[in-house]
Amino acid sequence: MEVLELKPITNKKITIYLIDKIRINPKLNDIDTLKELVSNNEVSFITLEINNENFKDFKNSNLSIVLNALDLEFHLLDMPEYAYGYLFEEINKKEEQIGELLTEYRNLDDKNSFKGLNLKSWIDVLKKEVNHDNKILETKTRPQWIVKKILDLARLHENEDLSLIHFFHERTLSEITKQLRELHIEVIVYELNNFHNIQNIIIKQEGNN
Image (cartoon, rainbow, N blue to C red; front, side, top):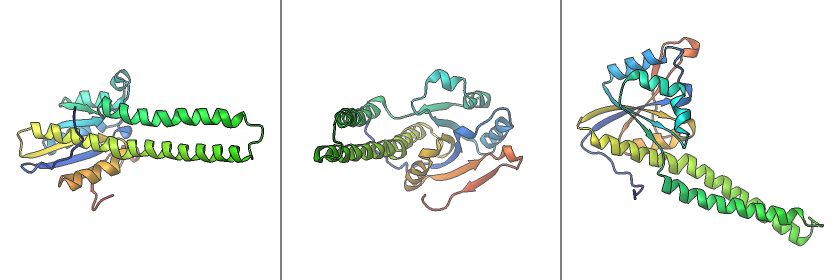
């Protein structure tokens, strides 16, 4: 069983190009643009967040079409099932409790009674906890696992100067960027501006998000 531990890689210089997976469109010139990025920066491999998506859905996605056209090693990354399962189980228990309390609350004749007000208050507390737990899962825990998976793959490559591309989901960008920088990895956000027919640019983000 893997442990979520983020250790820096001290014997490599690593550069990671982050690209929003949602914005990829093979009908524009994204394939050519990404081929140029891969070639100019000697990209060794690509990673992308699958986020519990159905693999069949991914195979039919725009991103899958682009990745296959690039003809470069790529890896689908997500939290381990056991880690996700444990956290989801805790959230599910609270949601079940909310359901039971709601049934009891709705059956009360006097919802403004002491019991009714207490039930309503407890339901509100549990709902806030569920929302908080879901946010932590998606914006903290999942991206930290993604970073660990990227590091594990980087360690397998012999290159001391290593470049790779990671296709991120918007909700994970902040934490992934933060964790990578804390591990002394250069992070570059690569923006595709094809919609406005503007030349693609590279933006280096300074400081932590």
